[in-house]
Image (cartoon, rainbow, N blue to C red; front, side):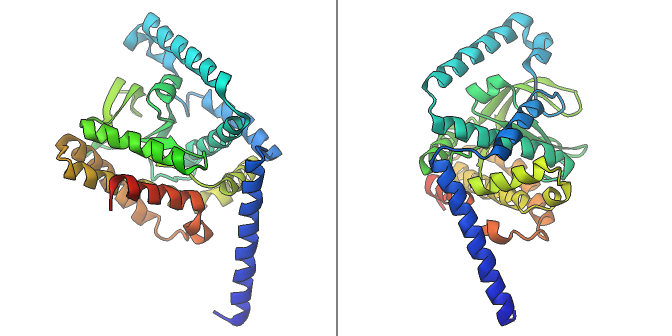
Length: 301
């Protein structure tokens, strides 16, 4: 590296740090950029599209119309209860989370961010009751269906990340992982409840979400196709699965260990495929680093 290259790299780092600081200050003031507002409107359209989101009324034949409608009424009650106590901070956080979630949904399919996985937003019931935002399903004729539940966390707070990870630890301690009530596989062969689903938490800083939103709203698919965010997410998932499986082994939860092993095979191979994508400045994203740190704290090294 030449002296000039060194100076240019330092300038780029300073600019990146300044952008991140400005983004964090806006968040602390509980403000959202216009691009986030526009992206959030687009995200809501994505969430109503059966291509990207599981719709509980499609399960009338499985649980009965009365049963599904009862769940929907419960969701409405839970949503109202949450809205009554939500702060402006909560609203800003929710919008940022929805935007990240929608972009991950779209570009997991369009840009192969998760290596051929069929990624779907969960039903509102599974979102509120099972605390799961998305599902990633990998399928091969040899191995069948391998499922991983993804919980998006863009609350930007250490306590929230730790709280979600501790909930997963409690599941392992009970010897039973997450359940998805409204699940249908990508081939349409199965509709119903899927049990023993590993859950992970993923998240990045506000500045990264804003960057992704800008590219998304400009329809800059080239920028998103090779964006380092996909490496960050895969590394977060892999770090958690590895730590969670090791914890389950120490607790002698054999059924749980098997579920993690299946997911690890897929995600480990996926990380190797992403090896040529440079992670760059996102290697030190503060929220991604916090997810990894809290994983070590909660599940041990």
